[in-house]
Image (tube, rainbow, N blue to C red; front, side, top):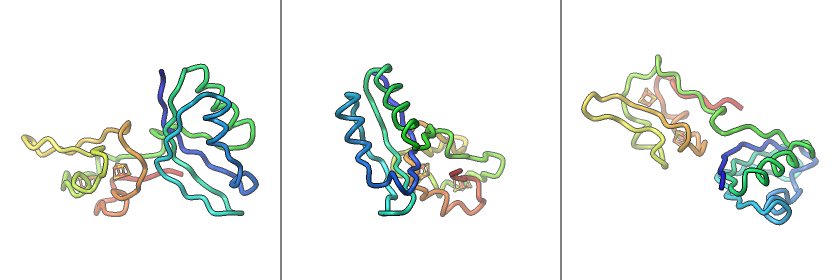
Length: 135
Ligand code: SF4
Ligand code: SF4
């Protein structure tokens, strides 16, 4: 069983297509929607976690790309600039999934990309612009 988290960017003409249903039905995948910004007749974005057999996952992602959806691995979309971080810990208490953590012994903040669900809360509050979401 493999699991990936990806950002899907939909062009306008695909926004109303039931692509997640097709991933489930035709490719035997489990799909968990982490975040959705989809407005009828406008471009849309979904952040999803998909799990299933590796071969099925590859085929499912190929299907999405073939119909015109841009598929970006989630980890490529967030950028933590450690050299800007002052370890103030604002983001640690705010992050809903514990992607930011702090080692209390040395008061150093760390970031785990794998946990991030791109809610963007930390991007808004970081006083030093140390976190950027790249879309
Ligand atoms: S809010 Fe910004 S500066 Fe503060 S710990 Fe988080 S990333 Fe670092
Ligand atoms: S974007 Fe959201 S989930 Fe990701 S690190 Fe920031 S607060 Fe946590």
